[in-house]
Length: 414
Ligand code: ARG
Image (cartoon, rainbow, N blue to C red; front, side, top):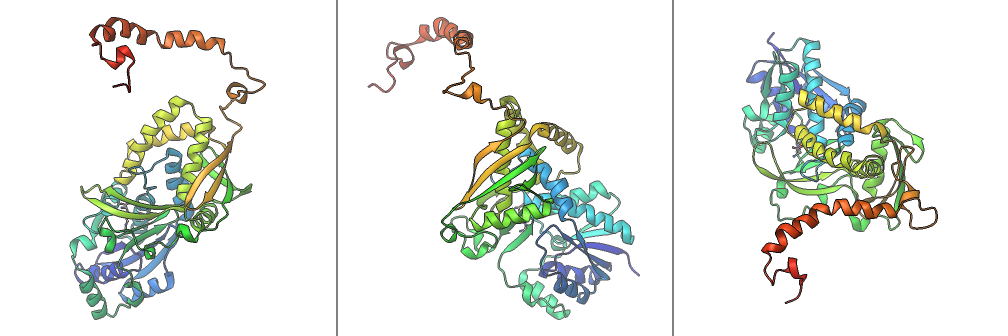
């Protein structure tokens, strides 16, 4: 018997072909691993395809709860969003899949692991780097990278080897799904000028088909992690699934962007992340109530660093541990509730409350009960404006020409 390899398996055309190819071309015994991060395609037919392609076994692990608790919720706490829009669903899934591949390799005594990511994408980087961190002795085979077959060739290869692929080759798009979102690329989406056809969306309604009446949902957070919807405590999987359904029904979470891949190319991506978009907005709103201005500002910089780190496949690093420790510390007072309105494609925070709120009605109010000492504003402004006044007298006024608006206050006059 040859050496054993563990393949990250989805049951689609590419990984079915890869199962056979790893045996034929590379002489491996293949164990297929399907990692369930939510929304797994039809497992039974995938397993059958894998076995027909000669796999020793097709194993399935349910990693949904771990995915949310140890990967997604820390990223939510950080406010990690790539290039302003992408909640990082696919990127967050990769390090966990890599870990489970390495675990499986240990369990079955494999010497290598494989994935079917293309040689142009981010996912290969995330897999390779994470696997090298967790199992430096394991060889990594990128089946698509090392065996360049186009679609027709892959279909022909499958047919030649009796791998049933009929239902897997219908879509012109490349998709990846987990509980945090759905990623779609390729096909006509490669033209960034073309509006995506309705068929690329699967989790969200188009705005014109959403209910006329808004839906309201109250999300409770505990130390930055969502724990309840409308007062009902829920496990992470249930909570995110419910929000995906509800927000998707209202058309929330469609993202159409051109993003910068790690390998240097720009690519057009469509995402659907109804729960992610809703939770990120709710969480942001609760932080506005419970963190100081300085914390919010610094944390925004950390969020960007955190998002890049996730996107770039650097989950298993000390830098990540350090950022995560900071983020976790910031979340210790982020406990409370946010009322979200879902309507016509938008998720809006319309109410927030917290037992740790920094908001003081007595300070903010213009009505009765005002405790803000307005006389203190005078002295404060005097000092705040002091350097401005000194600079104006000593520098700006001297250099100013007669027609300088700074001197004459003629802004807008001709
Ligand atoms: N561009 C996204 C990322 O790098 C999504 C990748 C989607 N993968 C896929 N097989 N369609 O995270």
